[in-house]
Length: 422
Image 1 (spheres, rainbow, N blue to C red):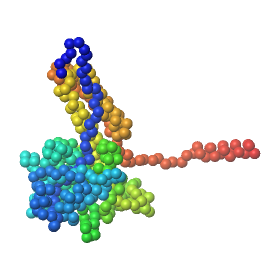
Image 2: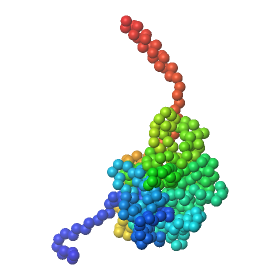
Image 3: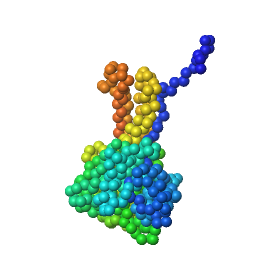
Image 4: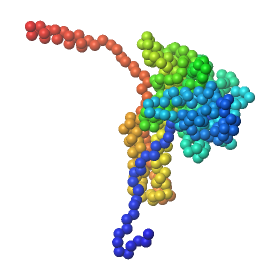
């Protein structure tokens, strides 16, 4: 439109603090072999779950799931996830990578690991954003993360997962051995804030009603989805002390006490593991009166500041939300005082929302006076100092119980006062 010679021109400028664009943190990535249902046609199954592509689906997609063996590990994983969903949740969102079943366990694990050069196996998740429109931020490889050639060698799948997770800011729930000795040997070969270990599997019924040993990781992933949903999609809540549904028993009945650190369950927790224990109605030291309960707050980080997995996921969420929100400023506005203040205010608003929700304890966002300089500013580059502290999970209480002598004095005084009245 040509500007008027005599009149008024109005230009709209959106250079204000932007509305936060939340990152999706509850999409589950599953990488594993998938067995075809006997009645399904090979062509239909291969088209639905190709070996060379990712598949984005909902966990209640009956048409796709009908193509898979109802007693296979993949269907069990999906059912294990679905069993944990909460009120008003219809399904979880999945990104599935089918790999070929090997001639033996080693070959199958090699197929799951895949290659970063060819984008196969778990490395396919690195291109999930472009390929299927979303990144999985909770990754599981059910039944394929615990085996070791020797106690001193790491499971190849568990060892490969941290590199993939770091690139897309995901976490992986990994199944480990069920015994304290086995779990300790296994966990000593791994180290990453991206790995969340769980000791042992669970028993669940198959289509014939028989109890079959299955992986626990899909169930924990389902709990994660439920907890995120309960918190408005924000991953700042621990999954600990949550009921596990749809199982008949843990792989092993672990001895656990809330007050005794020498029980096997507590010792696995001390090794940064997660456990599933049964409630006991007559045991005051049990975690619950009944049902099966997951307990676990830690990942395998070597740094204590990041050893609670909800802190890692929460920081990922804020950083990704900042990235998704601030990108709209790039190239659209000149670096003026208003633009810089809008960027700082937008980042501060993201943290303010999380603080009001009880996710973080406090934050500070500011134009960094130490790093910003005329040369960088002239080049269109600014530094923002973002600091925030995630709220830690409440996991231990120490109570000092002792006599209260003042109560005796108060009792004497009360009796004397009553006597005076009489």
